[in-house]
Structure formats: structure tokens, C-alpha cells
Amino acid sequence: MRTERQLNFVDLKISSLIPSNDPLKVLFETVDFSFIYDLLKDKYTNEGPKGYDPQALFKALLLLYLGFASSERDLARRLCFDGRLAFLCGFSYGETPKHNTFHYFRNRIGKEIFHEILINLIAQCLCLVKGKNLNLSTDSSHIEAFPKDTDAKWGYKTAEFSFFGYKIHLQVTTTELPITASIKITEGNEWDGKFLPPLTENAKEIFGHTEKSIKAVIADAGYDSTDNASYLIKESILPYIAMNPRGRENPIHRGDITISTDGKFFCKAGVELCYWGKEKTRKRFKFRCGHYKEKSMDCLFKNECWKGKYGPTFYLKEDHEAQDILKTLRATRSFKRIYKKTTTVERFFSILKGNHSLEALRFSAIKEVSIHVFMSICAYLSRLIAGMKLKIGLLPI
Image (cartoon, rainbow, N blue to C red; front, side, top):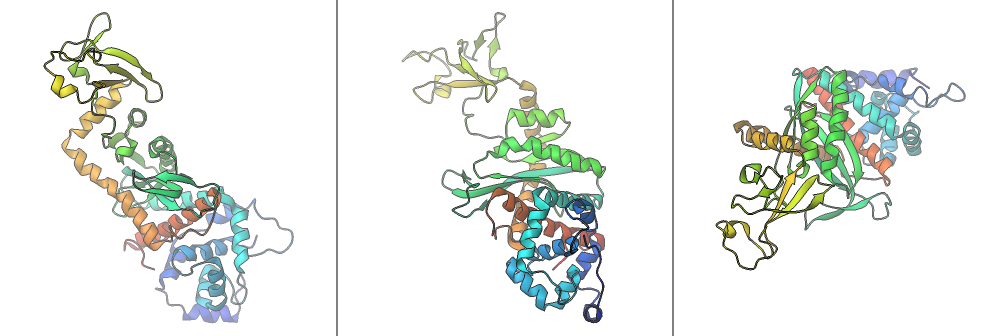
């Protein structure tokens, strides 16, 4: 594995022509990419030609997501004719890689190593943040895939909007400039809510290496579930999750019912509720009004409860504590103020799509798509690390 280069006369001349404040030069000199050698030491042997420096190849790929090239062919051509880009990446003039070299490099490294590189850059960012207790904003976004991509699936953002592709599930810090905390790429038909615990677990692991902790997780109504709330509470993390109104027109509140000594449930009108089974997947019990068979009845709350022929339906959650804590948090003055930070992750997706080619998908299969997403985030984090070290925010490129 080649880890250094021998500068020739042309390289020295090019180096002298590059100003010290060149943004790309500042980025590559400020961000530490040396860890790449340790990650790839088992991917190379000392036999045969040394090939290209893997750190230089990674920096070259990063140019795609920093806006310097539109494709790997275009990248190879620019490196060949632009001495500045070639030198800053780590290539000698006239000894730059062909476009298919980047394809072989991605396959050699693999999805897992690219993810490790991303985690290293996340850790570098977190080490530059002053606060220790951070809030995380959680959400997902979609990217559309090629019609013949066999890994992609149909997904729905709303009843009117569908897409064929993948979902990117993210947690980011709610700092002024968001930092990725954890990420997962799935098919487009996956439900967002079930990924909150694994995303938070991944974030906890990264935070543990940087002496940071998670104070709260902020998420929209798509993540509202007893399981998610119970998990966060168990981990001593505040769940700032909006209430999902769907299916809650007739929720059952313990304050509105009476439980007799023999275990019978009565509504606030004194009518016994009929047990209608248990929904195991949602971990809740279903009840119906005791008058559901009667066509006419005399009840003080008839106009309030009966909104259809089926009659009122009530649900009782197995885990009361998590629901009570959620209700208490939603009633506080600080809930609306903190919940507004959920837009942080939306802003983060907007930056990736607008400036770092997230939507310019050129690959098929979830493995290649994952690498594409990781590189897009790496480009943003590289700019952020350089900007934070220089105390100028996000480094302009």
C-alpha cells in the first residue's frame, strides 16, 4: 500500500502556484484523513505494484461530492488535466488514476469501511463541540432509484405521494451546524418509527468515544409509539416526540374510567366496557362500549362518543408510564420550543441534496447507494471540521 509520494519538478512548481488560502487545500490540510491507512491495512498486500495511495483515492472521490466533478469519468479527466486538483489529492502530475480505478477502489473498501470512515469524521466533529449533553433530531428522507434496481422498494411519504427507491434514516445534533450522530439506509417501504432505538444506540456508541451524552431525542409524529418512548425513558433520554393523531379519535384515559374490584372496566357514564381482544403487535387492549348492540339508548355522553354505527372503540396501552411521561412533556412550556429543533434534520437533508449530490444517484443496489450516501455526508463533515477549526462555520468551497 502506497502511503507517500515522490515529488517531481512539475509537482513542486504546481505546489508553489497554489495559494495558502485555497479552500480545497485548507480542507485537506485541516481534516485528519490519516486513519484511512489503519482501516485499509488488511485490504492491501506488499506484493506486486503498490498502486495508488488509498488516502489520495478517497480524497479524489470526495471531489465528486464537493462539486468538482459530475461523474467518475469526469473526475478522472479533471485530475489528468488539472494539476491543482491532482496535487491536492496526493497524485503526481501525469500519474493520475483512470475512471475504472475508482470503481475497483469502492469494491475493495466495501460499505463497512466507508461507514467506519464516516464514523471517524463524526467523532472529529463531536470533539470540536463544547457542550457535553446534546439533543438529537430524528427523521428520514427518500432518494429515488433506477427502475431496474432490484433492491429498491415502493414507499409512501403521504397518501398522495409515493416513490421508488430508498430511505435515509438520520439522527443529527441540534447544534447551530448539525452533525450526523447515526445513519441507516433501508428500502423505501420501511416504517420510520422502528429505527429510532437502533439509531439512538449507534449514536450512544459514537458519543461514548467523545465524552458526549444524549440529553433528548426529538422526532415527529411518525416516531410516536410506546416502544420508542419506553426505550428512551429507560436510557434516561427525554422523548420529545409529537403525538400521532391517527387512530386516536377514541383513546381511553384511565382518569375517565373506573376499574372495579373484580377487574371490570366502566366508562365515565357508568357503562361497562366490553373486552374486545388484545393487539399484540401494538401492545394494547381493545374495548367497545357496552351499548354497542343497542340501536337506541339513553346515555349522557352518546353525542360525544357515538360518531358511527360501530360505536366508540377504546384502547388501553400495556405501558402506562411511558404514555404518561409523553403527555406530561407535551404539556410543558418547553416542549414547543425544543420540538422546533426537529427542523434541524430537515435542514441537514436540504444541505446534502443541494450542495453534496445526495440526490444525484448514479448507482444501483443498496450497498452502492449506502456508499453514495456516506460519501455525501463525509463531504459535508469535512467542510464542517475545517470550518470549526478555523472558527468560520461551514468552510466555503
